[in-house]
Image (cartoon, rainbow, N blue to C red; front, side, top):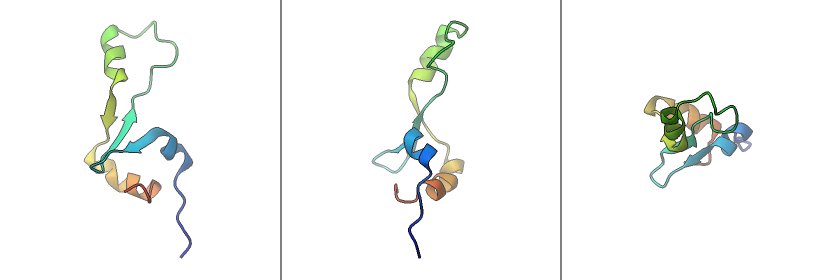
Length: 66
C-alpha cells in the first residue's frame, strides 16, 4: 500500500495537542475588523478544539498526526 497524503490545507490550519485533540484558530481576525463588536473579536482570539463528531474526518485528512 502506498502512503496516504496529508491534506495540504488541513496541515496549515490544524494542530494536534498532546492528548490527541485537534485545535485551530477561529477565522475573522485579519481584515475588515471595524464592523465586529469587541466581544466578537475577543472570542475569535482563542484557539478552539474541534467537535468530537469531526474527529473521523480529521483522522482521514491528517492520517499521520494521531
